[in-house]
Length: 130
Image (cartoon, rainbow, N blue to C red; front, top):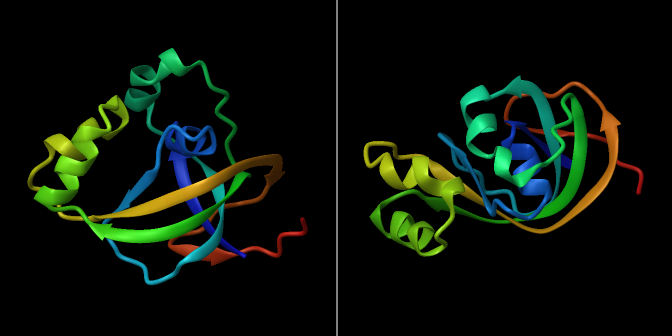
């Protein structure tokens, strides 16, 4: 199954259903089931910003299963759509008008028992046994 490695706190925000889009500088044509891997990288500034959610932040493990359903270009229209969600999770993308990456739409998130495994760049494969 495809896996995407994401820094904390963003992996946990996705696993809890609070963050619907994962932002990257590259696009993907892949659509389908995906595992969310909490990498060993931690964004300390973001951890402080989102501490009000009182989440657990495991690292170095797969923490959720979901569906990657779309990949959108982050342009003015996408920023307007994200603004309407009224979530502080998207503030950086909304306010960074010079950033021109992509948003991977993550839906149907289901937390799973943590699976310790090293992450990789891009989308990668893991033999997931349900």
